[in-house]
Length: 444
View 1 (cartoon, one colour):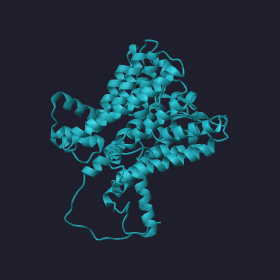
View 2: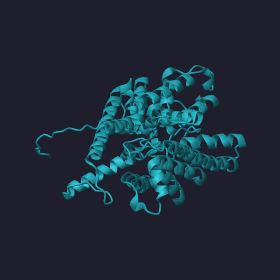
View 3: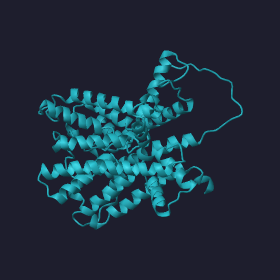
View 4: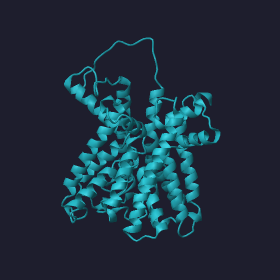
């Protein structure tokens, strides 16, 4: 046990699994459904996994199947998953005991990817304050719109605003409408707060805090912050332009909208496609030309130590800089006049290749389990599950139980896998007092 606790990152998968199992037990209760009947284990397990992993995939119609208690449980599980099991536990220790031991600090370090453990108290308070501030602001705008723009009663408007604010900032993707947010695709008072919350929550706290602290001197940002902030901006523009071009004339999505409606809908969808999981455009109506772009964006995901999934923006662009340096014959990989360590490059390559293998393997298994499914639909669904995006073309709700279980496993692995693997690799550094002779095998 002592050897196990020396690497607290190993506790991360067990923490998330415990939350999933507790959420499954709660969602199985008759009090959680609108029909007041026991929920099958598979449905409850899939929903709890989707909520804790902040994915948003669902095998049932969320607003009609679950009642108030069930929806509150989904909200709590999403908040817990977004904030982090171990970070939340340490925050409780901070509030109750007003002291933090070294073990708890190491647990938070493993969960948040914060490399320094000297200021865990301040880190946790900043995380909690940022989440609360963004969610309150989003709730105020969304609730006001539901109340004043759609004549919802004040209590219902507040609940709808709070629910979607939590889902938006935590990149959850559950919605209280059967067609997600497709009905609000041309409403800026709904779309823009959702896009804002998703972008902020998907940047990651380390990058967000440094960028806000040194916003006047971006040249002095750390490499991870530069790659995350500027990379996210590039992906947002690429996704927006590509999706707008592909769907401009498609009558199933934005073909019938005016120019302002096309721009708003595609911008919001491109903002949430990498992490958020809300459907602003009908996924079943997307043009096949859009699928490769959306799959790539989902696979990349958001920032490190964020509520987003995927291989992470910094990982993707770090590999891009490595390729560029190799093509130019540079001896080192540099980003902003800083040399990237070989260990970081190896970690990025390992995470990317293992993620590719999981997505490809998951797609093949899903095709074997589901007869007659188109390859691009299977790839879309598997990538959405692994990247914890949650956008679905309808496969999850219509697939058989083995396929649903496969997607649930991918959601769990996608949430804890890159985090655990990356931290484990960083903590498992070995030093040798000798080196073998070097040889250059033929490549290509």
